Amino acid sequence: VKKIAILVAGGSGLRMGTEIPKQFLEISGKPILMHTILAFYNYDHEMDIILVLPESHQKFWGELCSRFSFTLKHHIASGGETRFHSVLNGLKLIKDSGIVFIHDGVRPFVNKETLDKCFETAMKFGNAIPVLPVADSLRKKEAGKTISVDRSLYYSVQTPQTFQTKQIMDAFRQKYDADFTDDAAVAEKAGFQIFMVEGHRENIKITNTTDLIIAEAILKTNNPEV
Amino acid sequence: VKKIAILVAGGSGLRMGTEIPKQFLEISGKPILMHTILAFYNYDHEMDIILVLPESHQKFWGELCSRFSFTLKHHIASGGETRFHSVLNGLKLIKDSGIVFIHDGVRPFVNKETLDKCFETAMKFGNAIPVLPVADSLRKKEAGKTISVDRSLYYSVQTPQTFQTKQIMDAFRQKYDADFTDDAAVAEKAGFQIFMVEGHRENIKITNTTDLIIAEAILKTNNPEV
Image (cartoon, rainbow over all chains, first blue to last red; front, side, top):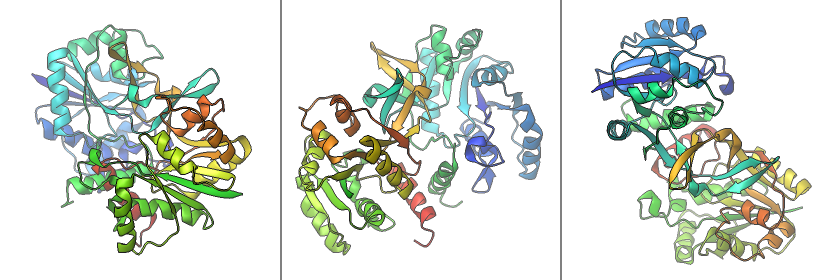
């Protein structure tokens, strides 16, 4: 079965308070996005890798690849106005049917166990998303104030959100809706039941400078020789 | 105004897959709980510190304090069946009126900015809880399945949950309810509106081995000389 990865790297980096979009920041001397691409390449050398980048970042990415002698084959799709539009542009580059892993470009630590679970569950049931219990208490905005909610009723959703190509392509034929907060929400709106697998704690999304410090620590622990 | 900290360390450690309850595990050569106590002591040397520990851990804690020559003055209250009962036991040791910070023993990185914000807001409005936006997508259990929810409607709640002593003591006169998932939920049920302040990302709750790795990294970055 063909495996395809769509790596979404649409972030503008403004949240980090840096000039460089966060997916290009380095951990252990290499841009985050290259670590993420390598995670998928190492999982399956035959995987098709589609990187979704804002057009304004594509030249810079090319220069980074040269500077780091990063020659792993990947396709580039252009980022859109929202995650939905970015993923849609990535889906358009898919040629074969199979299993597609839609993954945040800034989650470089996805591991083999999670990828295996997502793959197997998506093969069987059409899709799979990795989730974890929610660690902190939660409050919800409601009627102009916030209220306590029971966190044990919630799951924290990571990526890769994983789908049979036919299912996700059917789902993305829908018109854009502001409720499409992630890829599973798109599939769900199209009528597909979503299946959860257990994620892993290291699979963090790097969105601020503390996350960068955390990322260095995880990388050094996973690869003591680095 | 008198400041009081109630540090709740009820965890049995089973979740970590270790024999030692997680609040006793060391980061940079010192048990997590001592880091947490120091964070409050360093914020205000005059603060009353009340540590809530299961009875079965109190002897071990005393031995740890001897072994680490940890002599900062603190009172010990006994842990109860739930967080509500543990906090209630801590509240019973309060002698003065003032502002009480109810804090997870396994969040050693709370900083001065967050403590200041909590203190000032609680002085003005009766309470304050530090929150952050939710970083991952969320799903909610409903009617035997899970559904996508809009994470922008939610806040992730850290500690210290901070209260005027009179307000929190009034709230804890209620009978225990399974909906009391945190201290704010107790105050809310008693009719008090809850006020949010901005938390900080480093103020993590150490609940598993990955968190320990992350904690070491945060500590080293905050204190490069350690």
